[in-house]
Length: 300
Ligand code: SF4
Ligand code: SF4
Image (cartoon, rainbow, N blue to C red; front, top):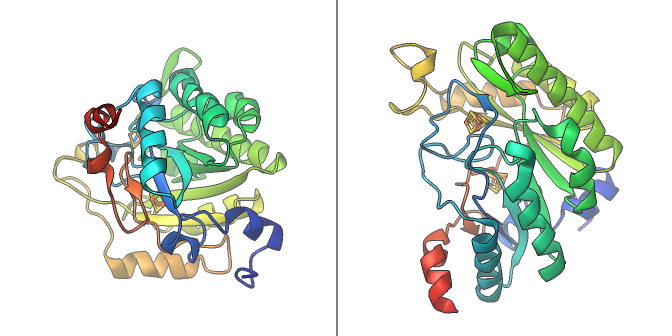
């Protein structure tokens, strides 16, 4: 197919087999996340560190953490069983680029040698992007997702209590300002190199809901090709930092109002399932349980 009428044909060529970017491909091509990145370099108020990062994943589930070696074995085993496997992503359970992105790049480096046909992608909060863009380009990672929840540090200070940057912990407005600047710079650097960038935003009622239109404009003007507005999934185990009563997520109607308001801005993705950080299979399914490290080991 020629792809959606409003999508650049060159972009379509790159994303048409990618289950997360193409509405059509998500029925035919499988993706797999490997949870090799345990550390995080920021604190989101909606995060509970016991569970997966909400950059890309449904929070409140625990993924099987793997070493890069275990991840490679698992990927090769899955590729044997699921021939539609086309995309390998690293989305947590922490931030894929935290702690020098050591495990993330070790995994990608091996994969490039052993399975060069697989597309690689990663998701990140963006703080460490500017210093890693060169290596991202080097490993042929052609899709990056950045979670951008604000473009105004005044809003950001209510979402991020702290960040860890240049060997130091930053809080309040300073933290939000640094994170914002790094996110915008990282986005610009990626798109300048022709790397496709999707932006995820977590919609947090009363905190950034009215602000997401500004986020949509800012990321579109910097070349993001998709903007995915996801609902905060509230859970008693989450949101404790928002106050004693916790923070609710948006209703389906509230979410749709914001998504509709952004229509005509950066192209919106509406089929993201917020997969877990170790999801395996077609988009609507998760066969992760069939491929735990133990079972892969037993397959030989
Ligand atoms: Fe949690 Fe992800 Fe935020 Fe890090 S970036 S604090 S892992 S939600
Ligand atoms: Fe795709 Fe969304 Fe699942 Fe990531 S979380 S693999 S973008 S559907």
